[in-house]
Image (cartoon, rainbow, N blue to C red; front, side, top):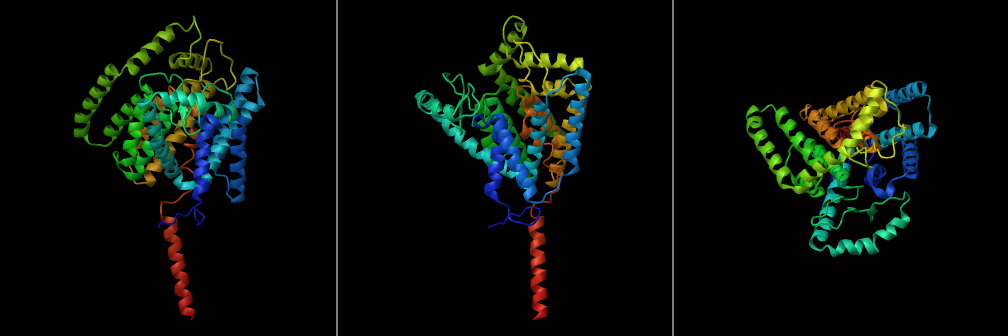
Length: 420
């Protein structure tokens, strides 16, 4: 049995680490854990553990926090509006993300991949059962979700039983798989992250876990996820530096995507619906990704360098949170947007380097996340902020600490032997 050590040479507490990563995901995306009370609880818990373990702040989190605090300050001067709770909440998200990554350490991705793998299996079983017998969904709605509604802190229209979220339009021929997350598209984002982490760790695209991740992504029926996987694979092939693969595989993959778009009604109909909604945005209340993007871009243009902050007011018929990429641009301008993704890109490059993987792979990951961010408000969530810190904190190569401890123990035994 392999013993895993943290950076201080102590055995990792796997139960604690799994709990922290699960709660970290939950506060970011699981309906039961949505709400300020859970954000505060997560921040206080990780702050306590961070200090109790005698850890020190890295300069990276200090500079990261100062950049966004400076942007808030500039926005206050420029627009004359300030809400303390908004600024405090944003700083708490940053610290919660940093503390969690710092406490869990260099195996953060491993715990995350395992959790998503277990949830993928569980979600496939539940989704398959509902598909085979739609009456199960009726039973869950009538007898299971009402109880969890009563114990969910933040009231919402999402029906869930913690380990699985029911798709609102559940009376459909083929149910969409949301897993435990807010909705199917959000589940696909976490699946994408797990897929990319597992590729780097195992240095292979196809393995048991990745096959399950790809199957699960397909069951989410998320058009954006399909597009993100397409973009990711194309860039992955190009950066592999094998021209013959690019020349053969890219046309084949492009052909498959076009066929899928034309044959899968939920893809082309959904995109056409979003486009039609965007043309009617002035006439009715619309929550389209395209409309969100337009609202955010208009706000971004009004203050492209520093953004307009997190407390701007939008019209009743508008919604700005469905497009995370343009929302980040609108909130913090080119400075905040650029710094955010430079940090994330650098983090992924370091991750690939430490696992002896092609560092340019980070380009494919960021590209996929940007595509996913056009349909989800990802980059305002603590978990995705954590991607900026995971591999910029101090850590060692896997197994190095354990090897060092073994050498020290052997030296100690030899010295004792000589004394005798």
